[in-house]
Image (cartoon, rainbow, N blue to C red; front, top):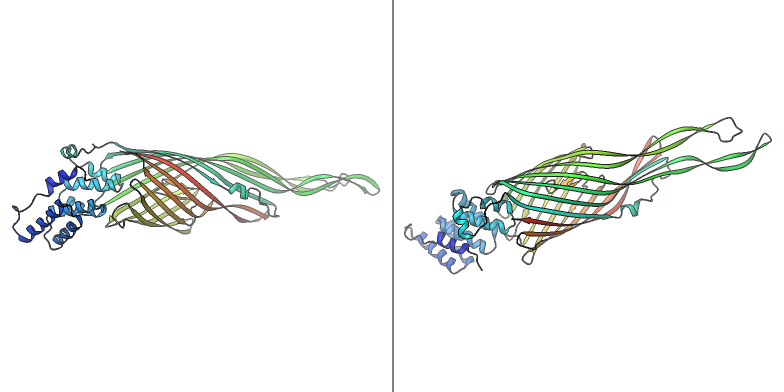
Length: 479
């Protein structure tokens, strides 16, 4: 059943233009499209309106009927295209403003919808019972846990590999909590602020070769019996468990000009606090046998823990523009994560094949340049609408995600572990008029590593694969 805008729309834009135009073709198209509108023959209305526009007889009233017919057929992007062309010619046209607000709302594009809502005059809002503008637009809270088999698979590996020394650092379970608010101080400006707290288990292991006293044995030296000391090479292993604590502040400013483009600039400031295991060694003299005055030296290791803090950042920007049934975005970031400077560029698109959110697909290509090395990361996704108020998304990303940021910096991966690929799925559900529930699952194939020193002056790196499973749930409130 059509909502109350039909009454207003019929009153404003469906008045016959017989008394205002004299051209017979205009009168014919006006009559045809008016009849189609009254009879709710939307497909026929699209054909007749399109023909009128193509032949140069498309009046504003005919174009409005065309836009409304697209809206009734749930082809919201096509409707937006028509009404934005009208809006560019007359920025106070209430029909165009109302329908742009409605169309963007149906697509879930709240920022663009609020932009046009802010221009609609009070009389129209009262007539159609539209809400007034709000300074605070929305709020959200998300929490998640990531489980993996890194500890169980790799904590007992021989990291010394017959050498003199080995080091290993393993990342374990991860927990996070995030909250944010969205405000609109101006209709063309949205600001989003969020805070995230992350706790991740960490295990460090150091294995070294040491010479230790293992016992004594009776022996003779120049006819004198004595107890000779026995020494053997053995592993000295130091293991410590701790937590990595990451606190992340995030801000994003969105400058919205829907008929042209949307420009977003964002930044992260991170504080990482974690424990680091360190080793030191010294040489000590020892006597192979008490009766012998000659001596040798042995290496003695000692181990300490220290807490370190690092302050890191990400800044970035992205430009989004809608072209027909596509939304194109181009952006980049500059970051300092894990003491490594990185520049990141990306380009992607979304495709709305039906002009609405019943199915949305797209992809993104990112290029990372870090310390004179580059890597390319492709990503694809597909979203399908479930019934009336739900959406299911499946996505995949291939490549090394070390020291990267995603979703305009909102998600930051600054783990030292390499990610080979990630497969994600999520369900987004409108549970109440203003509340949306999100449940997400991510599977990642990752690699940790350990360093082995076969000799004191050289080393090699061994990669150890493991799997990670992230489950997250979030609740969003929007006005």
